[in-house]
Image (tube, rainbow, N blue to C red; front, side, top):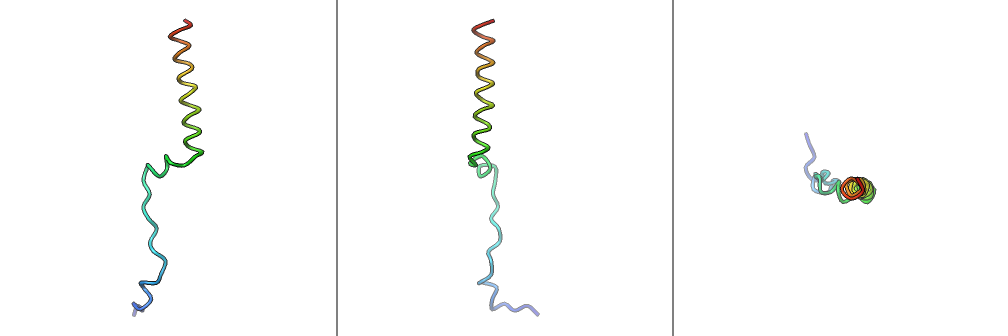
Length: 50
């Protein structure tokens, strides 16, 4: 039989974390910013220099 007296004091189940939690991580945002800047520089070079 299960002891239900301590079920309320146990560790809560892990919360579900979605895509917005992943995007809020600093290393991922730095990586995406660098990639975005490289794409922006390449597109401006194509538009203005060529």
